[in-house]
Length: 201
Image (cartoon, rainbow, N blue to C red; front, side, top):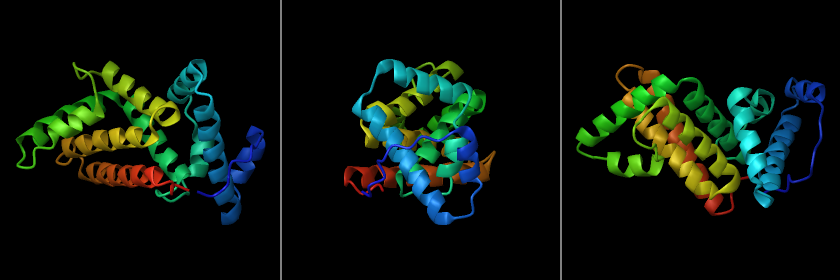
C-alpha cells in the first residue's frame, strides 16, 4: 500500500481549487492522501462520538467536496472504494422508499430463482425486519460506521450484498440502475479482497 498517510489541512477554498485542477497527478495524490488520512485517523482512535458525528454529517450534508476528489479514482483504490460507499450511503438515505421497494423485490426474485441467493445476501446485507425506510437508513449508517471502525472488508462485502439485492429488485423497472448496482457490487467485492491482501492502495 502506498504511503499517503501524511496529514493534510486545507481550507474549503483551497480544496475547491484543487478539485478544479487539471493536473491528474495532483488529483491522484490528494485523493489518496485524504482517503488514507481519514481512514487511518478514525480507525486508530474509533471514538464513538466522532463516528456518530461523521455518520450524521454525511447523512445531512454529504461529503461532496472530498467525494468529488475520490470520484476520479479507480474502483481498485481506497479513495475509489470510499467514493462508492459514499454514493451507496447517499442513495440509501435519500431514496429510502425506492431502496425499500427494490430490496423487497430483490429478496422475492432471488428467493424464487434457481440460484437462490437471497438467504446468503439477505443475511450478509443485514437489513432488520420489518424492511422499512427507518431500517434501510439504519443499515446505511451501520455500513458506513463499519468502514471506519469495524472490519473494513466485511463492511464492503455487506454493502455488495445489499447492492446485489437492489440490482435484482430493479432489473425490470430500471435496467440501467440495476446494471450500475451490479457493477458496484462487483467493485466492492474486489476492494474487500484487495484490502484483505493489503493491496488496496
